[in-house]
Length: 337
Ligand SMILES: [Zn+2]
Image (cartoon, rainbow, N blue to C red; front, side):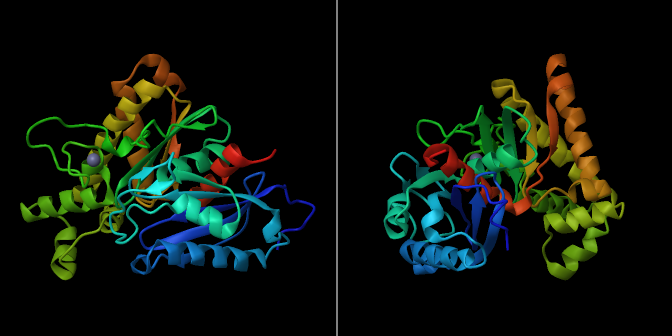
């Protein structure tokens, strides 16, 4: 339990909706998480049921803190998929049938009796890292979130670049290959960064190499499991497997192309790499090699002044960045500070 003296009021509720789970946290005015937890999305029950369970769980979380429901001044809601931020609508939600075209912001606001700030989940994550994570000392940040897909978020002087049509900061869909045989992105278009650096792509590119006969300790894994994950690649790279290391290195180089394109538009203080697929991050040799190769390649492709001044590093908040960032966006837009 957090002590009342340290509590920075007002307090916000942060919600990070995902296809399988929803992360929910009570966040104070300094960005500190007072209590947090997950519920299963159970998307097949529909968005109204999901919102009702978010509120019920938030009320339950509050009982572990000294904060009452009345003390929450606003809610930040981050969601995946495509959305109309101005209207507060979900548009198309892949993997969440029944949630399309739902006015989620207003429904949550009515049920909770609180104002709601609505934001893309990747922009929420970027805001979290900007507010209290790796980017907290800086004025501007670009975040790439590497998971099953690739999310992007851009924060400049406390503003999240959501765009006029809710499609700003889509760094996963930067074109890095415009040749006719470029890979197809899950969005249906070709040559996008996500098609080269997502966990799905890392697995696919590895399987292609194994099927073409490349020698690797991963051949046995493919035989046993009939599939390969990005985590398998990370583990085998850590044990020195040459193919796995090559895949990690190529992923870093593809990512560097996307980073340079975004850098040349925004010129931020820092590029932050978040998401579960970091090949072990700073904790493992492979993760450190991944980061070093990204830096080397970015610095080969950009201007001297940016080589000297642009920081590239892993995120620090882990999976908490989404709900903390959503709470931060609510504080920014709706807080009565
Ligand atoms: Zn795409």
